[in-house]
Image (cartoon, rainbow, N blue to C red):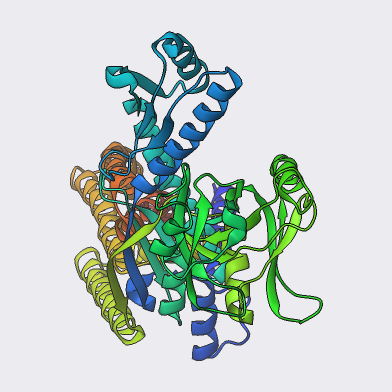
Length: 543
């Protein structure tokens, strides 16, 4: 008995030491300020405690749908040309209400079979309909459309997370917001430059390399660009605004092909660097192997002296940065010039590395929590936890006398284990998380009350103290398990469907309950056994 008691006591002390280390680590000193600094370095504070920026962004999924439809139109155009099928025009609808549709005009009735076969084989995600006036419409299937929309939101979340991680924001919260609204919740605790972070998050950084028609000639207006092409926009082309050159920021209009040769998603790497002759900031990039081959073929065909010489437009977020001529074949690397500053070149390289957003983002809400408000929340939460815990401990001492000391020790160990868990896991402590800690204190006392009342009942029935303790723990065990399991299940549901602060509450509550099972049952029993071994036979138990 004594040997088992010693082993159990050593196990409790070892666990206590481990979780105290989880709270403070190895402090630089043992003064109040040094311990506070160690505590805050181990336990991360959430937005409501540390201050920071809260934003809700709307993902414009129609942008991604329109881009997918443009790719489908280009693919269909190439396949019909290979099959020697003549057609008038293949283009997506300009109507923003139906970005999922592609219209095919001027198809000969004899070639409709080849059109259907091509759609079935190459564009399985589309349905073909129509036929009046030799015009057919490809409409993205609802399943493919829903999958694309879902994937767009998930890719946007991942791209934002990569960008925020690169900026070094600690413990950010980036997740879907609402149900079916295509919205993203972003919380950035401790952000010292919210304006810059917001601009980087919202920037799509959609880099595209396209063919610049008319040899990349910049026009002073859209009308001038149309006049240069007989008053109409060339097929499969669009008019984009941009700078005249890297050194001339005059607004100009370019005639650019609709479909890009390669895009930012084809990038393998991007870095800020310096141009050799001018030492100006530029962004160097490397393409993936497949994109490099495609880019090589394009630049070989359109280079000066090639079969179809033209210029290459570098388009960022639907604006032309530059439209240089292609002097020779370019394989898998190059430079982007645009009159960058060091900071803008560094930010663009970071955005390209982190992945282009598949769709643009619309700002819905921004809320800033100041550090002073967070500090006030910490003070209020800690004060409530301390006062509540002291009140509970005093009540246990008065009502259960000597056994109340047992309960208070178990309660303190429970709190140490919970804080140590937060320190080890790096979990973020929020104001609802502090509420979870306070609730855990109440649940811990509830377990002790169940056990102590069972022991009292056994003593009233004339049982010896050792037998009463044994029966009290044994008979209260199932009730304690039942209450804890039901509460943990509720916390698990909150974690699955709740937002960030609610998840913090669920995490602290769940682990607090698990720690309570250990302290209220195992630790309290060891303390009772230690007390009973020191009592004389027949001596009363203070409870």
